Length: 67
Image (cartoon, rainbow, N blue to C red):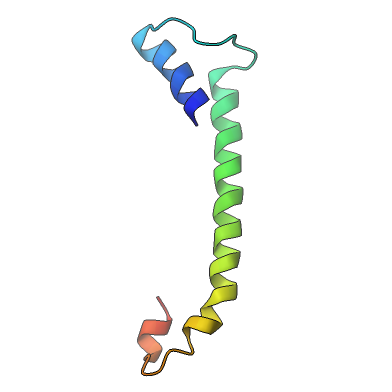
């Protein structure tokens, strides 16, 4: 993410290159999007696995379980 920020800073603000450009800005952005989506999927799987434990809370209503 910081690498993409540095690259965008160079393009948008005309800053000096802070590292050699081995990839294009859009390639780095696309790669980061893929990584973030994969991380989000993993987090969703973890949340789904933990939900049955949270559902054990006494007094928890059906409406609050759907959140």
